[in-house]
Image (cartoon, rainbow, N blue to C red):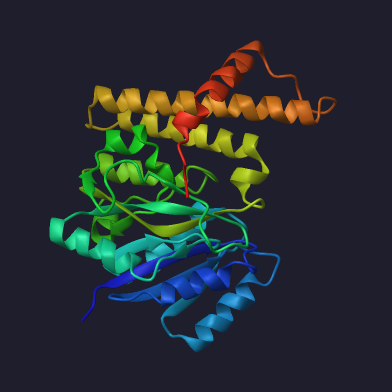
Length: 306
């Protein structure tokens, strides 16, 4: 029997993109999948579409949150119901390559890892051909490297979608923080590594991430970056309360907080310039951070064009 992987999709107003995400999960080759779709009280046809797919394929189970609570809370519903030995999160506007899960499983089982991370392609909304990639320069193509908690934070791997051993997740009673609407992935995956999860990065872009204009991270930069800064602060506080001790991790978190605060300052200035009569004037400190962000953003947010 193939290993069962529970694919988790949290969906909110995703009727235009959800079918592609669902099909990419169901068409995985070399492993068995169950698909758990959680509708976060969408106002469009997301729930109807998910239900129709479930009626045609018994590998799909559909849930709905009692009210709109954000991706963390929606995913937590699925984590509680998951039956697979492994968990894979898929955003409702993204998709998997056909052999993604089987490839990551092979690495996890051969190296006895609790988490496996891959690089990913970037695509534009409505397009299937990738326009760029992330993390493909961390090592040679198809090569692998171990990832510690410090590596994960310092390299900015919070935007990846690791394959996670379900037993490790549950034995440490870790979940997505439902109060965070951006950066909840970074926080949980960092906490797993701090708890002792063994992790490998494999340089194979097997995940297709869509940068949608309607996503929170694109639509409201100030709000999303503020949430990410809060996630990093929570991570910093959680490390200080555990037996995990690492000056390097503390420095890595501090660096990511600086990078995020610089990006936040830039977003505040852009918002003020677009709406000077309604937005508050950013501080002089924000101006310094804005300049620093503009000088170093290409290095900090390296994307490889195709």
